[in-house]
Length: 220
Image 1 (cartoon, rainbow, N blue to C red):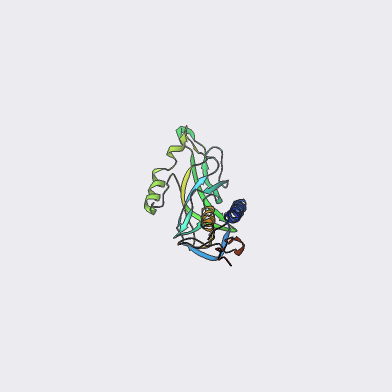
Image 2 (cartoon, rainbow, N blue to C red):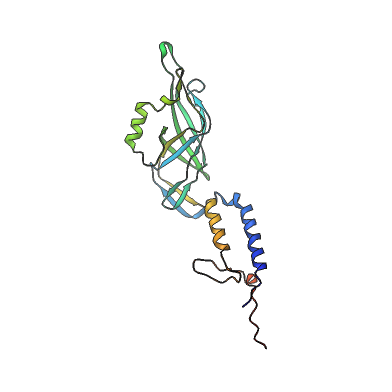
């Protein structure tokens, strides 16, 4: 059986190009049919997106934060890296007389996933990793997590500083289609032979117009 594979190949190339152009819409698209329970105290890696200091900020000031890495429950992506949120300055004091150092207490308030504000608690700077226990977080806070940021008595936390927070409550969040998952799906759809025949682990072409195969000449 001979095959004219040109048309199917061109169609697949065109379909892939269109899919790639649509990725910005696909990324972050939420599957409303699949909702996942995110337990309270689920760790969330946080990145500060702006500087905060004991000299330049006051209690009640807000600052931008983002999620530093994907949060997954099992295989389901529930809070994608890059999700934006907000932190708050709880306490700030300038250096005092007699060499007293400045003071600064920060809180991560929430990150936004779609139209849901995921409330956060237990924010600790400089503590990154999902295996951190409650005790180790508390010890970090007691020892003084801002020691590395103190200069001349002023505490300055620079942008891109990482920390860890935890979800404050149980949340039901939709599973999210990531760009990686979308690209893998496109690659699987394109793994067909020239005639569109099904092979093990491969999706066959569903469009009959793409099955451009000539039947063998029977001499009739």
